[in-house]
Length: 249
Image 1 (tube, rainbow, N blue to C red):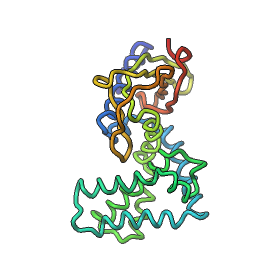
Image 2: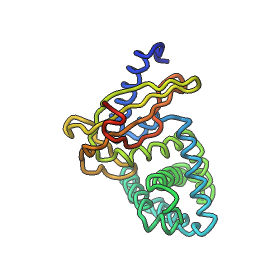
Image 3: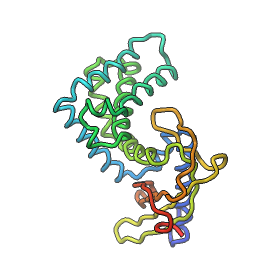
């Protein structure tokens, strides 16, 4: 575990972890970014999203789920699709779940952000495809395996990560400053990001889709990234916009 005694060491480590997180997002390394995402925050977001989507499925959304599974099943049936080509097609299928039409048909357009719906089907789709193609499971057991995947910490971190990507995707960013927030139970740090030069700063890519066109964060906005100290290190939790002058000097 890293040495985190004293404020100086904690600020330095929070800065390093933030840079690692942004670098992972910039190169499209979802697994690397997930490993730096807060476990407790991830479980909270995952629980809310999974509950909302399964609730919608139990209402009138079952045909939507069946349609998604059928689309993934078509990749399994296509013997010409292998390796990266199959996963590229899978990502295309997943990206469509973020459309307003899909979310409306599922019944969550007014209750869940686009990124959370995409994260759900990203995890479900990849797990189902792996169970069918590599595990050679029948459709029913494969879907059960995919649902179990949603309960893992890695999957939970995808839900949390999608919130970050929704805010940062396509932006070139750099760290403006790092502040500690003392707490007797769970110390936190706030990392303020600002727009950077697109040629030098990491450009965040989208989950399950192609990179968006690089741009700079608006001049009158900064981004606040909240880190939590857990498992002996800093992990990225919530993220949001901050007005210039209110969260950074």
